Length: 268
Image (cartoon, rainbow, N blue to C red; front, top):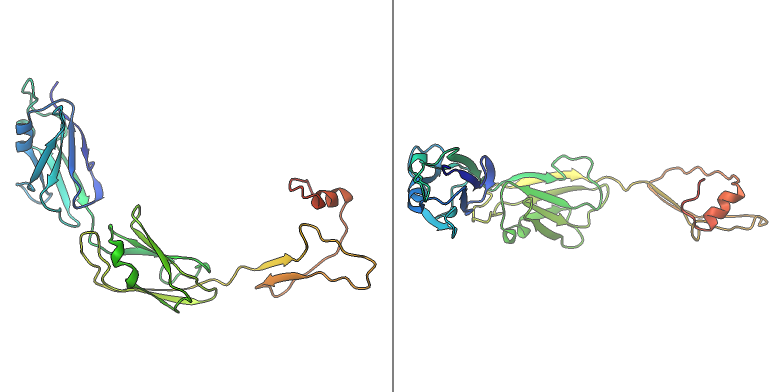
């Protein structure tokens, strides 16, 4: 059988490929290493010839190799990787390469902020929520923390963490309800290659009021009161509630006993 490319990494049409990621190629059989290296190329898609210089590291059985460019690839660039098919020979019979012989992928873009949560102008941000920045490419966490300013200033310093799985940076601080926050993201945040975001980003949003809440202050699920007292008082706590309507009514003994026994599965 003629040699074919069985797999390639990055895969065809991949995006956000890191600049120092090696190229991996696997064939369906062993090939002449010299012919494969001479036929191989990696170059920006608009180039008509040439290849990025680099080194090859072959598998022991000769069925594949890893190509490492000598220098990082360019940001935000579509690359083509492939072979001059007629020049790649099988190790034994000398047959030429058949099948697909070229693929494309794009590298990570320049560092940029592509979104935040909450977003600028959001009107539905919950109180006590964190603030997350999403980046277009992998970032250097050491360059992030001192670039975030929060107004009004929280009563304590914020906690933060960087998520490499989605290129996000989350700032957790004790936000208050019914408060407009303005968060300034200053220039200078850098990606892992040292490229910096050069423009500031300002995000402004109000937080929601606390959700309404009412709680009867009873010792457990059931409170006991003396009906013979001249006056019986029931205490409750409430938040963001302007009116509370109470009703007094009787319940069947069966329901009362189930509630008093703490049975959470009783059928009311």
